[in-house]
Length: 335
Ligand code: PBG
Image (cartoon, rainbow, N blue to C red; front, side):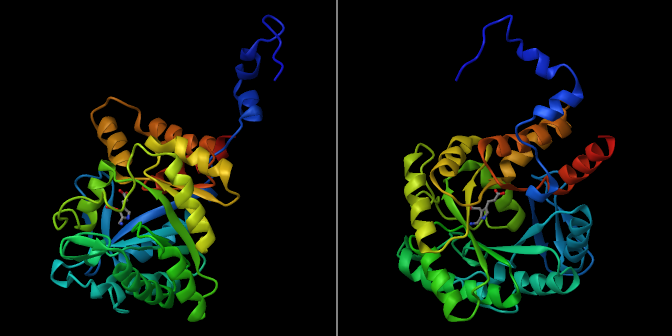
């Protein structure tokens, strides 16, 4: 790289005015990059605030349909649905996960019917349905990989049947992408996309999410035997290579902001779309600081979403999606 020395080079020339800054900006966030995660509850016409996620509400299916309409009107391409399951339905075999009438399947059908133009993504993991709060089946205190795969395949098929466009295996069991892909092919769901949680870390930043779906209280122990160790970077490449070989279409890193280096490494190593999950704890930190008056919440939101694009992401799952979409629309109008 040849860079002339000062004063031939004055990098500030490229920053002098808004128009030139726009002209040379290397990455731009657009509404096309956003996936909006939404929490669903039973009932009608109700919205319940999630205390640890200011501004986020759990929605009954009819309200979730309205949220999907709002997302479509804002130009958001895709939403992801997470069920807050009645604790009475949580069992050790997780059978509610493959009940075709479960909350998330009903919500998916309602949304696909009312707003067919929006993509619907669903998680594939057992934690919303597990009496132990884990993402896999627990046998004698151990998370049993291959029994979990059988359950995940059943969940995959009811969710595909309900109309999910993207399935996101978030459980980190070994071999789950291959098991899901084979089952989808066998049952004629060859168009269902898999966005694998390729590198998902055993993170403390998920705790507001666990409040939102009501899985935190149930969790016995931690998820360190299946989610990755935060100290590991190279391992994310091996995990990702396996998921691609098994049939994943899109890759995801989670959490997002503390793992931008992992995003960059995966983007450079693999020729596939890469997404980040800007998780609940990342959202709540910005909201809390903004509420305390310590940060400009809107600017912190836009700056962190821009960081994902700079790191190499094709898109971001974020609870900020509708707010960010509104800011982007406003900025576009202003020019
Ligand atoms: C479930 C799942 C989790 C998240 C997405 N899917 C929690 C977990 O693994 O414990 C976290 C999302 C967030 O924190 O916003 N497997």
